[in-house]
Amino acid sequence: MLPRPRRGDPLWIWLLHGWDVFSWAIIGLLTLTTLLGDVPAGDRYGSLALLAVLALGYAAVRRGHGNTVRLASGYLVVLIVVVGLLSWLRDGFGVLYTVTLSQFVIFANTPRSAIVHSGLGALAITLGGSLRQGWSVDSLATNATSSVAVYAVGVVMALVTPRAVAARDERVRLRSRLADAEEQLTEAQKRQGAAEERERIAREIHDTLAQGFASIVVLAEAARAGLAAEPEKSAQQLQSIERTARENLAEARVLVGAAPRSGVAAGSVATTLRRTLDRFAEDTGLAVEAELPDVHCDQPTRIALLRCTQESLANVRKHAEASTVGVVLAAGPEGVELEITDDGKGFVPGTVGRGAAGGREGTVPDGAVPDGGFGLDGMRRRLAEFGGELSVTSSPGDGTRILITVPAAGPTADGTLPDGAPAGTSTDGTCTTGIATDGQV
Image (cartoon, rainbow, N blue to C red; front, side, top):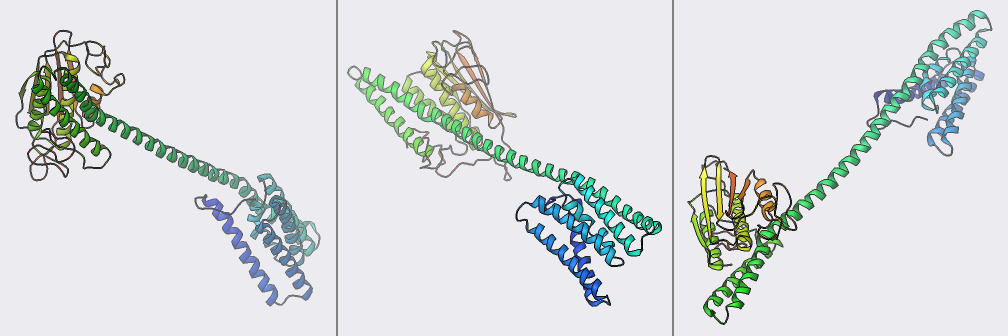
């Protein structure tokens, strides 16, 4: 049995059920004319009884209690008998076959069943009309011709309807698959977002807390070794340990959301880098040569340059065995460039992993993930977020050169470069929370 149409069903299904509703409007009209018209009592009561049986059968099928397939098949048998008897009982009532033609398709279980039942209906009204008019070849031929014409329409309906139903079911399946795909996509996006957030947090921890703790360890070892022989230097190293610990505490608060996100004030990148280099020279005793002009850039660029500088200096401290570090900041038409060089022992780029002897932390081929760390790969990922690039040049015995290139940011409506510095940053290059670029929190 064809269920009632739903939203999104083909037009043919709606028309078929609309025809069914229309048929009952016609049946109601025939019932009214029978009640009010000048009809012999026998024909009147017989017609009303048959129409009542038909209405009760239709209601039983639509209520759908029990085996709906059997109920529908039984109703079609009742429909065939009723239209046949009415065509025999009343003149012109053979039109009920045409009016109820849609029901043979709606209540049939298969196209074959619809064709067979509608054929039996055509036969019933042919025999009923012929018997009412008087049995003759002419009356039989006349009634058969009209019945066959209507039956042909029923056959077309029975053949077209399954295709429309199949198209509807296919659309339902496609919608279901689309909904499943959208749900899977949403879950994948959530997982990807979570993975990206974990990676971002891991990178921030590596660039801030991990580097700070590594610095604390180195300074603590040096202070302990020189505590008796060089108490003044050890005291200075203890002060550096305290400053670094405070900075790590501030960064930890930022990472857990207990403080505004760290940043660098507008136009302060040169000052920030200078203070970072001074701290590095103070802690390591290495000579630092820097050219840091007043370069203005947006907030993400300043943070990226600072983080990359910190990572590069950490690698120099741990692996390069250098005596001099050079840092050059420059602004050109294509963007901002930061070059960091050292005269250390160098390495072969792409062949040394994290912690290998003679190498720099995280030195791997472009795009690869360093063994157990974030190092140069983390720098590449950070720069790639806004179109920046990282170039590493080195060879054993010739030191290392790191070149950071960041595309220029466009000016804002008032002609200045975008800043975006968050609340909590000051105008002298220091931060009130997060990284303390001057060594204080």
